Image (tube, rainbow, N blue to C red; front, side, top):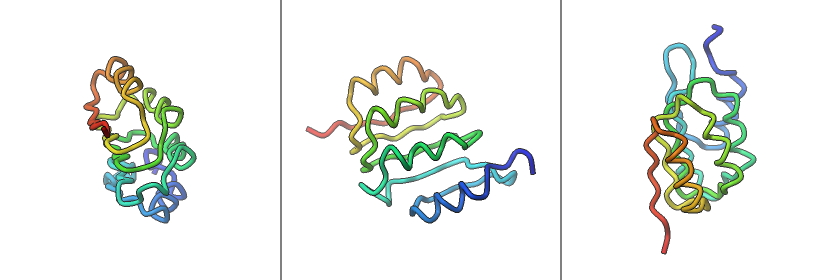
Length: 111
């Protein structure tokens, strides 16, 4: 199936504890890292570079930083990005909102 994301990627994400939603084609639609908490950082996030058509990504409560999230601006199919409770700065979120026009970015900054 040429449109499918690599099975190794899907298996690795499952092993990390991510909740996944797949299309019938085998492509990732949704990756939810929120159940994984602080165990997910920039290294694990970089795995998603292989995801061809990811539409929803939840990084709530993870340890991802600005450096790890910055490359997500290149994911043109992303429609929903949740960053609440992560280590991402409000400044990066402002920048992403300007560059990722078609993506809803949910970010509640901790006070």
